[in-house]
Length: 294
Ligand SMILES: Nc1nc(=O)c2c([nH]1)NC[C@@H]1CN(c3ccc(C(=O)N[C@@H](CCC(=O)O)C(=O)O)cc3)C=[N+]21
Image (cartoon, rainbow, N blue to C red; front, side, top):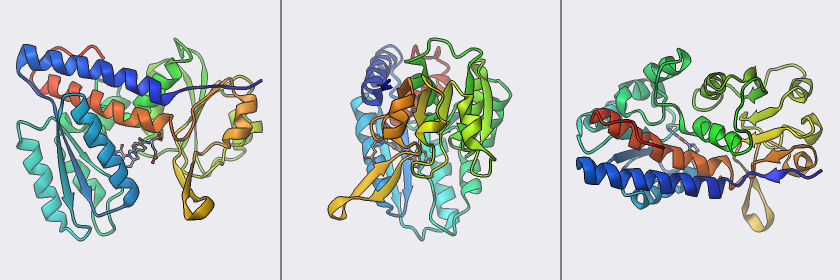
């Protein structure tokens, strides 16, 4: 058996198309142009790539895009002051502070300073708490993307056994909550879990988000399971280039899985598309418009 490939590129492009149509409608009917502000502190090359692609895709969807680049040695107070300025800027509906922040900056304090209504990363404790309480919330983009990719294979996740490997605030924990909302049965595993292979073998849905290259092996996967690989690990490749691999041993997993996401071209694509969704949703909520149809 060879797994079918879940094409994040195509699914993300479709989603962006729906966002663009809703943005056009909100603009013409209500005169509201959704705006996203991205704050990048320091100059991590990978982060710069992501920020550039966020900027491009935001503009392509017809939204306003604001980029703020700060030096790695920016004072904590200056970073918080920028966040507060964006909180009160009426042209900004979404605020994303690219993580991780350089050493010396207090991530929790910065995230806490973001207005929860503009928290398109879904990281503010208000949004995390609302999600965990089953209340409407802005939810983190990568987990939202994981659910959309899963639903491209399974119409309903009700009663399915899911395993989430990883418990980060940005991915693992919120993904668990979104899966519960879909009525899946969820096992939460992580780098300290005992006998991961055995836990995985029970799962119809496997979400690998531990940040360890190719940790999930092909023979851990239940035959026919759906595998969503959240990992993006840069390994040294040929001729001094870097090679991207996920948290799943892809070539092995292809043989046992029913469907699998590639890296790149899987979850990463959805993350940015869902950021556009969240920015549109935030803009509609802030202006008291009906929730967008995306
Ligand atoms: N506050 C915050 N929110 C984030 O959502 C956030 C963040 N910080 N810090 C970094 C991670 C990483 N991230 C990605 C975005 C796009 C791709 C993406 O487009 N990937 C493509 C290309 C990958 C490549 O070539 O590098 C793909 O997988 O096909 C990947 C990863 C968002 N993150």
